[in-house]
Amino acid sequence: MTAETHDSAPHRGAPDWLWYVGVPVVGVVLYLLYGRLIPISEWVTALFPVARNSHSGEAIAFFVYDVPKVLLLLTGIVFVTGVLRSWFSPEKTRAILAGKRQVWGYPLASLLGVLTPFCSCSSVPLFIGFVSAGIPLGVTFSFLIAGPMVGPVGLGLLYGLVGWEIATIYLVFGFTIATVAGFVLGRMGLERYLQDWVRELNAGPVGDLPQEQLTLVDRLKIGVEQVREIVGKVWIWVLVGIGIGAAIHGYVPEEMMLRIMGGEAWWSVPAAVVVGVPMYTNAAGVIPIVEALLGKGAALGTTLAFMMSVIALSLPEMIILKQVLKLQLIAIFIAVVAAGILATGFLFNVLM
Amino acid sequence: MKTVNIYGPGCKRCEATETMVKDAASRLGIEVEVVKISDAKSIALAGVMSTPGISVDGKLVHTGGLPDTAKLEGWLRA
Image 1 (tube, rainbow over the protein chains, first blue to last red):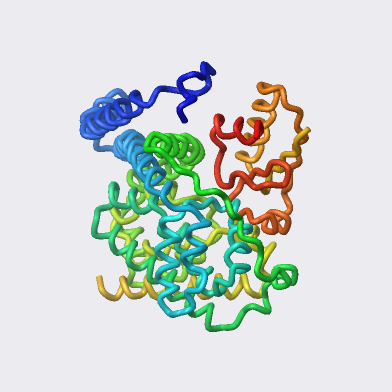
Image 2 (image 1 turned 90 degrees about the vertical axis):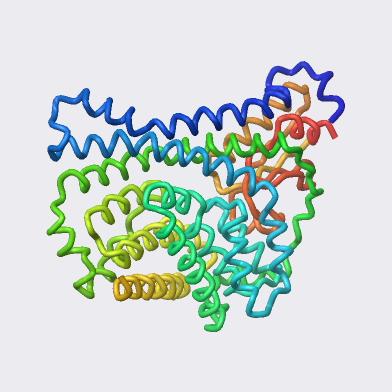
C-alpha cells in the first residue's frame, strides 16, 4: 500500500496516526463519562417535577441512568469484539471444523460460534457452506446455536448491568446448551429433513479468497464500522427494553413479581420460555428487562430461561432457516434447544 | 465492460455494496454491469458464506461486510 500517499481521494479517511491516537482518546473520554453516570443521571432526574422516591421518580431515574450506561457499554463491547473478530472468518472456521468428526467438534463449534463474525442474514449460505464441506449437521447446529445465544453483546451487558456472577453462569450454560443440543441433534440422524436441494449439493466449492492481510488500522476501522452498524441498529431496542425495565422497576410491586416469577411455582420456567420464544428483540433489548426482573426478586432460573429463549430462539431466524431445513427439523431444533433452556431454568430455581 | 456479481439476500449492506460498486466504477470511468444474486442456492454455489460477496468477471474477490473503497477500486481496475 505504498501508493496510499499519492492518492488524494478525500474518501480515503483519516491518516493512520490519527487512528492510533484517536481510538485511545475516545476510549478514555467514554470511560470517564461512564464513571460519572450516577451524578449526571441524578441531576437529570431532579429536573423532573416528581418526588425522587415516588413510582415515577424511580422509573425516571432507572431510565436516565440505564440508557447512557447501556449505550456506552454496548459501544465499547461492540468495538472490542469487532476488532477481535477480525482475526476470524466463516471461511477459517469452516476449515477448522471440516473433518472434526470426533466428539470435541461440538464444543469447538460452540466456541467458534462465539468468535466468528456472523449476521443472521447470512445464516443460510453459512449453513450450506458448512454442510457441503462435510461438517456434520450436529456440529453445524452447535455453531448456529452458540452464535446468537452467547453473543458478546449479551454477555457484556449482563456483566455491566447484572454482575459477573450471572454473566458467568449465562456463559457456561449457554455454551453447554449449544454443545449438548448440537450433539443430541447430530445423533438423531436428521439429514433426511434437510430441504432436498441442500442434500443434493455435495462437496460444494470452497470460496478460495486470497487471504487478506489486515493492518491494525484496518482492524480498528472494522471495529468502528461494527459500532456504527450494530449500535445504529439496536439502539431502539435498547430504549424499548429500558423503558419496560423502568416501568417494572418503578411500578410493579415486589409481591406480584414473587408470585409470578418467584420460582415457587414449577410452571414459571416453561411459561418464561413460552413467552420468550415469540418475543422478537435481541440481547441489548432484553437485558435491561432482566436487570429489573432480578432487582424485583424474580427467580434466577426463571429469568435465565426467559432471557435465553428470547435471545437464542427467534422466529425470524427460523423463517430464514426454513429455506434449508424442513419444518420437522425446525420443530426438533426448537424442541431440543428449549429442553436445554428448561433444564437450566429448573436447575437454578432448585439450587437458589 | 466488467460484470460484477453481488451475492446477498437483499439486506441493507448488500444495497450499500451495490451503490459502492457503481460509485467506484463511475469514478474510475469503467463500465460495469451489476448483477444482484439473492437466491440462497446460487449464493452457496458461488462459495459465499458471509454476505455480501462480490465477484468481478466470475472471480470471487470479497465476502462478508462492506468492501474497502481502495480495494474495491483495485478489483475493478484489475
